[in-house]
Image (cartoon, rainbow, N blue to C red):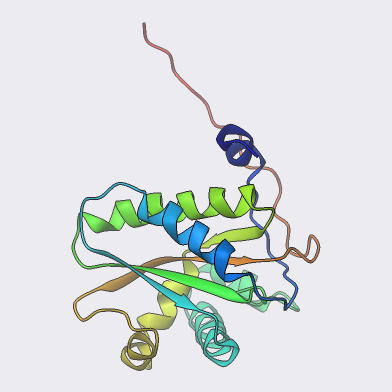
Length: 180
């Protein structure tokens, strides 16, 4: 699949099989992430340990339920909802300085496009940041090998698609102004 088709066909997948992606697929996805803008200290933590992913999932869900943010509470209260959606691979992107924060999102997008090009499902996650801000945040950072002085900015989940559970409607129309 060429780059433009991968960009256009990329979607947020929220239901995965338990089958793990291959090391070759993971290497391709990580190489794409490393090819993002280079400003700032960005670290990738690849989590494929099912128990650790489940801990991050459960901690995130509890933080969402306790957030007081209407959308988060409603989403986390939806029957069957899990913030990591059962994905077998979670990649955390951490920023060591302010300039790395937006570039982490650029790196994540590269990973999402690469996953699409490989025929895999993927999804960009922001809610998982809450797991690292809570009571066990320091413990989770250690287990996920997030460097000292870095903060988890976002995550990317990757795996084989297992349906359309929690599929979101098409994005709102995005407009463009042309000034020539």
